[in-house]
Image 1 (cartoon, helix red, strand yellow):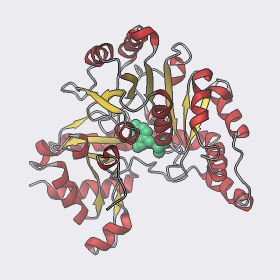
Image 2 (cartoon, protein in one colour; image 1 turned 90 degrees about the vertical axis):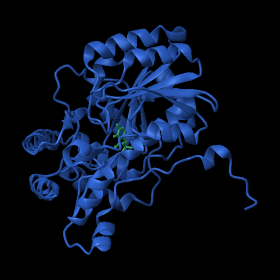
Image 3 (cartoon, protein in one colour; image 1 turned 60 degrees about the vertical axis):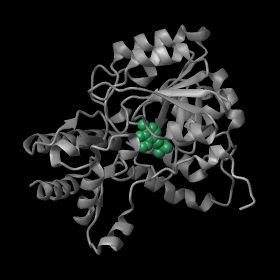
Image 4 (cartoon, rainbow, N blue to C red; image 1 turned 30 degrees about the horizontal axis):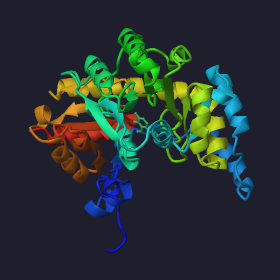
Length: 373
Ligand SMILES: Cc1ncc(COP(=O)(O)O)c(C=O)c1O
């Protein structure tokens, strides 16, 4: 080929999404397939969002409101911040990309951990930015001391990404440790390292020692919070995520952002979903109940797992089944259940299971049980 493909692009490893249901049905000739692979809301989308979308369709010939005035005003009120302290993106993946593009240049670096949410590394790589990864401890929690050492030592590091709780591990950093970490990062190179705390799963959290995201802001100028409508609000398909942070810093991100990133349906759906507090509560409660059922199932069947604060659980497939995560994933496919292998996170021995509805979970448990010999 005579068209030059830059090295940085050739090295990109494409993102592997969860396997689609229809594809699995076709491949294995199955009538019933359930998907517990993408940490989506088991209860579906917010009903209020669905209703609002129906009314919004007739306005599709118009461009969306580039300033997202109405939605941002509501979101700002909900979060108790100013509209200028919010930056909207086409899903939080988009926000991650925008932050890296705004606050680092090719040749610089982001710092995260091993087995961190994969988009950090993918977006960095897309922008010619290096990813430096700190280790996890035996409980799959980030080694914060090592992160601090790395951040101090390497002045290429301009951003730190930490998901709390993290996907795919489900583990979290508790209040006291997080606050001490943030205080120490603030001391590095005059507070010039930006910390992005990804709270995608915050609404599912029930741990009392995990700080609500709004408590961290604006105490730290160099901290931004990432949130999404893809999880508890059930709107993964419409794409709406956002960052909350310093107005001054976000004004630069706004310059990088395309004006019509958020389509008009996404704005309408997210606004309606935000007001659907009953749905959020129901989703939280269902997840808690169903996650506990999974834990019991794992304990009963000798399948080790990591305690999770999200709507998913990571199991040790090697210890539980004597097989790699990919092997258990492939066997489960034949039984009509799609899980998520996490070998791309360096966790060859593990498998991630999203928490589904009571019926889906029972079906998936039956499939797993049949695989235990
Ligand atoms: C930790 C974490 N952050 C961000 C995202 C991306 O969410 P969005 O759908 O808003 O792009 C995910 C999606 O799975 C995630 O697990």
